[in-house]
Image (cartoon, rainbow, N blue to C red; front, top):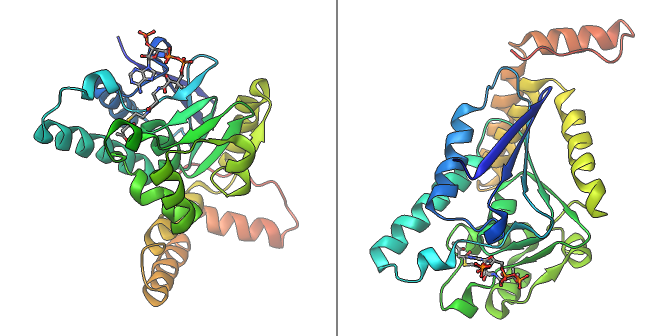
Length: 258
Ligand code: CAA
């Protein structure tokens, strides 16, 4: 039995955390199941991933508190390393990723959403890093990604106070890209994924690689990353077809996944 369901519709693969009885809380098995699903992604046919949660209440209500309660510092380090490893893999995955946040995204749930490239959420979504109320720090990347997304001052306010943020405020601070009524969230994520999937796949991946690499580099080195990715596109069939298509007044080129 897996705690992650996967469903592919054309070029879009949706991975659903499926542990609704525990509000999709992330224990070691959920992390392993997520990792196993990433291993199975067919990079030739899939062009965009969507992450969401089963049930109407939660994307994920965090790391599993029952599983963590009696951990030794060494066990906690291993759990944090594993969660960070899986989420970093999502962040650097060679395909664009969208989090469709359908309710609570607390602690590890917020951290999973932040590991994705783009976040859309439902009107009932609630984001937060409540770890200090449990006597711990965020452990799956929250101390590092929240400040990169919303700025150091806001991230410190939220993490130190453990204040949760509703969808409208998350939108205003740039934590999410869009807010939708609950029943329109997945269709909106699928529509965006399909729009991304229509574009030249190698170019989309190269954009992600350049942006991920450049964000942590001084500007001159970051520009080098862009030059490398830009020039590599000129070895692809997509670049030749895309540009020839424009020059021949041919629009809506269908790009092959090569
Ligand atoms: N871990 C384990 N179980 C959890 C859980 C979690 N993070 N969140 C919810 N559950 C379980 C509850 O224990 C409950 O199980 P039972 O029915 O067996 O009692 C079930 O899910 C439903 O939850 P509630 O009854 O609490 O539902 P609610 O609607 O009353 O409250 C909630 C919802 C406000 C999200 C509340 O469940 C809650 O506060 N959850 C914990 C949120 C949290 O603190 N997350 C951070 C975890 S620490 C972390 O994530 C560290 C890290 O960075 C690695």
